[in-house]
Image (tube, rainbow over all chains, first blue to last red):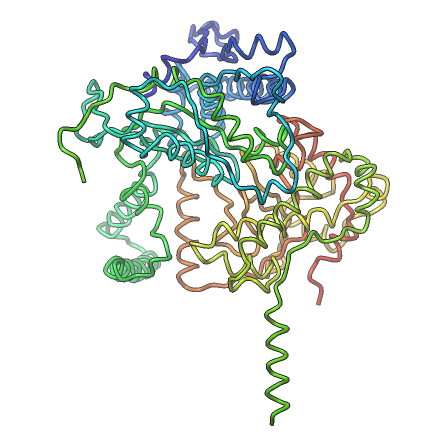
Length: 365
Length: 259
């Protein structure tokens, strides 16, 4: 998935000889802020990103924040490599998936994934062309906007007919898709991104590495705090820990311990464990009749739903984090920001990022 | 007999009055909206972080709670009640944010005045047990924890029932009042054994119906709303340094639970 994603990337990866580790001649990956022609022109010309961001906001959101993420990423990568047991080379996506399920590399992972979604977000945007004499839509929203009804009339896009037909197949209509996209973004309260993804019809288990999969359906997925779409390496961690720890306990049970004290402890553990097991069994048995207003555990979510074993190809990222609208649109301006954002999506890039569509001969439902 | 029935009815009518959540009045609100809070906020940033944001939160809270069982309750009560209901988390968000933000602004004052106040001896004695020997260490710990946090959140100094005082960082709208919704872990990356056990432990505590008696003493807003206009997207560290210097410790000292 990341291979496809990175095709649109303009990131430069500059392998260089580490000055510190010159003798061992190891290569370090150092990152630079990805090039974005549109944004660089805007910065130089000191003009706003027409229809969406002021010049100041672009500077803050892309150049300042992006540079900060790059610096932090490089610093953490270097620190991890100095310790000697880790080797990170290659592109951003590789580093993200490598660090995703290792809590010790939290900082590298977070910086890398934030950088990735920042790049992915801005790469698919282009300034809107304003009708002459029309007021710029970049304006701070006021208190009254809480009570305004969001408008979804007169939606025009420059999507190619192929994409329109795919969206209509998956979401009903472009209008419904737009509303779902905006509402999903409104639902994110902290930092987060809404992704438009193509969903593979087969789970990863049945796909070999070379197999790209078949894609019938488009879907929207929310991620939080720098989460990435290909969360497969990450998901299942809770389940794996559960299994690992219960295996370890089972091993301990098998071993003979000389000290009485240990045995006592063990017995205690065992009895506790048995209690847990019965409780869990009860829970599982009563799942169907259980309170429909309560959710299952994290493991249930990992295995039963969402990401587990699914292959997704992201095509569009909509950043719904507060920083994106606070600067230009103020506290009340999230809805307005998202509506303006819709007008600035470059659908040709979205089409290019999507895998070829496979039409189903037989409908699933 | 008759009169009793009427009295009851009257009481019933009074109870069902619609309640609107309105922005609580800060003592220095007028001055701060004109001049900002000297040492930490410009008037624009104060408007964003308090006047606008608090209004936004409370208006949304009113809209969501009208006509529900939460209608007559204070944000604090709504936090406690909605925290355990999966389907009420949107309500919880507004209540928790509003409450935390109010706690935060109650304890701020201008830098000159703040510098004249000190944490009480009693408070510092407790902090020494957490290897926080002096105010400078507390400051650097808060700045470090806050600026290394990804995403939105809150920083609290909380008092546990056993009188320990610890720092607590909650993600997004986490509350210190209920362990199940304190959201201290960000499970969005690698999960280590400690985090796994922490989550398992939470599950167990919730299953046992364990109650929480933790109380916040100090609350610091890490949301973008609290600093982005004055300090920029990367300005959290500078903001935390400044905000720490503007804490009125007299307020914090009074929040300690004293018998």
